[in-house]
Amino acid sequence: MEEAGDVVLRLGADGQILFASQRTVELIGSESPLTGMPLEKLLTEDDRPALQAAQAEVLGGVRNRQFESRFKVQGKEVRFELRLSSYTSQQGAKELLVVGRDMTQQQATEEHLRHMATHDALTELPNRLLLSDRIRMVIANARRSGQNFSIATIGLDGFKKVNDGLGHPVGDAVLRIAAARLRKTLRDSDTLARVGGDEFVAILPGTATEAQIKLVTGRLIATLQSPFEVDSHTIYVGASVGVAVYPQHAEDEARLLALADAAMSRAKETGKARCVVYSQTQSGPPEHDISLEAAMFQAVREGEFLLFYQPIVDAHTREIQGFETLMRWKHPTLGMVPPARFIPIAETNGLINLLGAWALKAACVQLKQFEEVAKRPLYISVNISPRQFRNDKFLDVLDDAIAFSGLLGEQLVLEITEGTLMVDPVHAESILSKMTQRKARIAIDDFGTGYSSLAYLKRFPISVLKIDRAFIRDLPGSQKDAAICNAVLDLAKHLDLSVVAEGVETEEQLAYLEQRGCQYIQGYLTGKPMAANIAMAALRESMHLKIVHPDLRQVGK
Image (cartoon, rainbow, N blue to C red; front, side, top):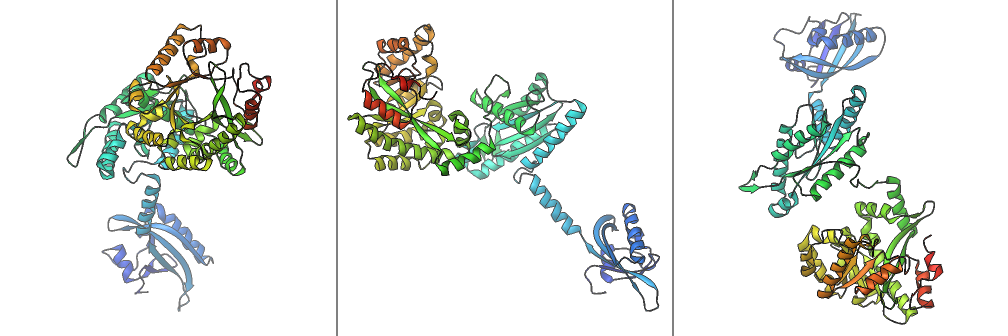
């Protein structure tokens, strides 16, 4: 007992200490002798009833009892795990044996692990797990009290350039400084969390009106506009903020966070260093259906994804010149799932790279079959998503598709949106140059609805402009749409670019575009997106779609 490393005590039936090991004396640090003292006097008042109950039980016949108590040790409280058991001494008296283990280190370790599980290691702010718990608490309180609140998502502007240009250690330092500034700006009742990368989320109880939101977010933006001094570098980043209000915009945690994030993205798109409060009129985040996402991976394995082809027709001769490839998903129970529903999910989870690679190769192979029927060269147009375009392996995928199909490079048109090019123009210029080295042609899809910077028409190796259907719909009656179409056609003529007008549905639209010199049209007038076998039937029946075949008009209905 003297050599034991833990607390060891012998007690009389009345709880008086009969013996205390040397280790016990060292741990307790009592100046007066422990022998003869009631054990309960060494415990905090709150823990004495538990000791008394345990003593009564073991003296009453229970074999042993184990519980935790706090000892008053040298002016502070230390937690011990105690185990009591009874025995009969040589003199025949009932006595108690107490063995205790110091839980201080274990408690400290557990506290540290709990902190690590709920806090961001870099900034020491609450992480997403603790944020979720805090939001649920604030929602519950708001339902009881009627006090509304808002969620603010804060994204640093230009942080990627800091990481790429100065390195991650400098970037980490900027994040720590930003976290400290934001925390200092907020109230004690607010919660600030880091949810990943350069994004923070603040819970703002009692902040729900436009004036309140403007005041708080203005301070948050202002505190990050001051320069950051890190390792002799003077750095400017700034921040964009998106806000969603409970219960005005949403009543559950996930939706509030999603809407605040969508509003923050809107703030970045419309100038940065500003706050945008979510509005029903702005496009919200796509509904991310988890079950649909799981079904998509299953669909890849089961071959449920299909390619449809929409004819691209010479506006003058009505002859099919090529096809645009469009992806479809034929779900066994849901039927045809709209691309607008599954493409955003595929972009988010990375599945778009796999689907895009398959579509590119399959479309190139299909074009060879179309040419066998048409007995003349055609071209195939394939949409390239932003994530595909930024993928390091995209050029390898392109090479594989061309080599596998035996297609000539110039027969392949790759459609890219304006926004994809402008995210990183330097990278875009490099990739586009390598694509054109393979003879592939570049088309700007939905021209006029994105950035529409005339500078990239000069900078990038573009061959085709596709006028968005939004400018075709009201032709020829709309003067504004007519002016835009005329300007695009005139510009393309002088830059030696081909033009495809999308969404052509009437003979009046076609006549107007043909008169203005538009070379190619695409739309329901000359054919809806159709399965490969129907597209080949159209090629067999006529090389000139002067009037769309009645069967083709029904495709997709």
